[in-house]
Length: 243
Image (cartoon, rainbow, N blue to C red; front, side):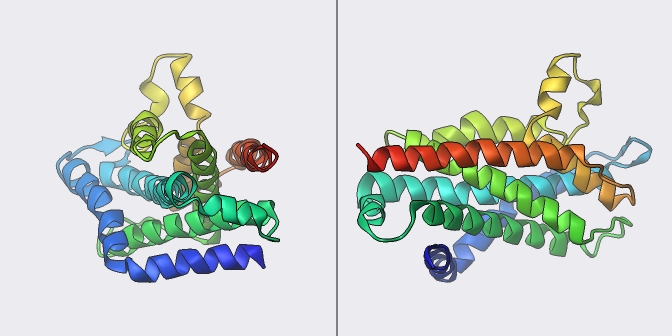
């Protein structure tokens, strides 16, 4: 019941700010597609660069959409509205509150990715997506929603949320196999980057889009990130309750 309550709150917020959320979700990805996809007339791994770029932008949209949906709202609720304190004294199990936040953020990321897919449908790329593609998008959104929950507990002020975006989301957006392949990166650095969740999501979605099997390693990496940050989020909120 607690999960549904949080999801309903996210739905009300989505309906209220529908146009703002939609415009914010498509501006940056569309600019990337225009500047990099149409401006760079080249190939990558033997295919047109746009075919390499679109799956990366889709994965990136799930990351940014999920993270921003949770990080800012949770920071405001905890620091200024004190809504988190009310949740703690309510009969709602705290793990359900965390799960609702994570699911709501992931769905927001899925919405952002769906917009990109719709916008790129008229482009004849030959890329294909299936249920496994959407599962990867959903898992990627859950990972970054969980990271956002953890960071919201570490935030000391509302301005920390944009800083976390600059420190974490922006570097991953450009480094993690989105715009350019990690194959040409220096040894050691390449291996570290390839283990980040966005790198694995981009790789799996891209493989499916080109008719290949994504393998299982990426799912293991996403599952590990989700388990670690999910446990951290639960420990943080229960620790705060016991202070």
